[in-house]
Length: 357
Ligand code: 13P
Ligand code: SF4
View 1 (spheres, protein in one colour):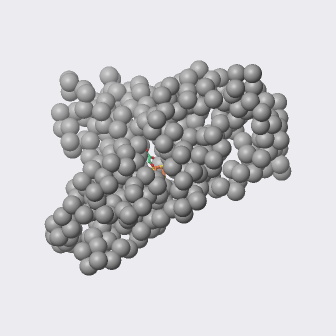
View 2 (spheres, rainbow, N blue to C red):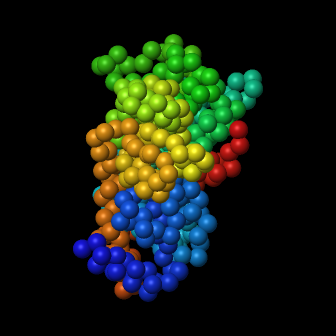
View 3 (tube, rainbow, N blue to C red):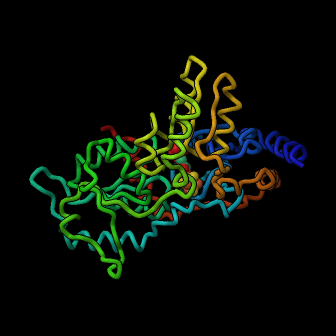
């Protein structure tokens, strides 16, 4: 039962003392979040992994790419543990290193590799945090950088200072929404088409581009649509609509604001008057905010329950298991990024941590 699992988790945590730290992403279910030592968005969780060198083990309650990032940023002695190894991210899987390398080579064939008179290289690769460590390493190796939904704007500005254009992967929506907010016209954001049988790429469009988008998307956030926002506005005059930038562009445009999971949380926390909020993001987080802020009316834009199915794979039973194994002196479900990937991926992550517009 949940109560028994709770007792087991508490007992194991007590036995470990400060040797293990539990990090939880906002999308985790409450049954897991209640045992987390730190809860945050993906940027905050990366920082949390960087700043807790005293913990021997980091139990990462989130998805695989986040645990990889934690392994890259933590010390070599620290073990990063993903309680259920099946907790991946379908968006991250939409950009594999081979396809991106192939795209990169083709782009080099079109643009060459020489900087222009201002010293800007033809293309800067930018990967969303939601990607494999191999892609972060690819960016580190090729003058590129990582971004999260909370710093995508700053990172794109960083990239435009150094490059004539950006190759942004895997999330087309975050790329498009962020570039649009920076004033890049839609016609300067072609989507890379790897399939010659489907027409391939319009070379002139690539030459004129400022941002080349990848075709990835989040299956949770693509469910949100403008009709849901119109309905919320009709049903609740004065409603504040806040969505995550992984939502399609029309949805972000129709909302009052868009930002990372922590941006959404802060926007609600900052409201001084009772307010109705319609939120476009994962349901576990929305329900938790609704319970935390009973003075407001908070609901999810999608009337059909929309959990992130892979985040949901972190069940408290797995958390109890990995903790008890640690108590017994065994490390299970450790996530380790190869040394050669690790160094370049760290370079790209450190550029992100240091990026200023
Ligand atoms: P943030 O926590 O950075 O907003 O990202 C949301 C998300 O989809 C994580 O997968
Ligand atoms: Fe991946 Fe979307 Fe789940 Fe985030 S919400 S982990 S992007 S599938």
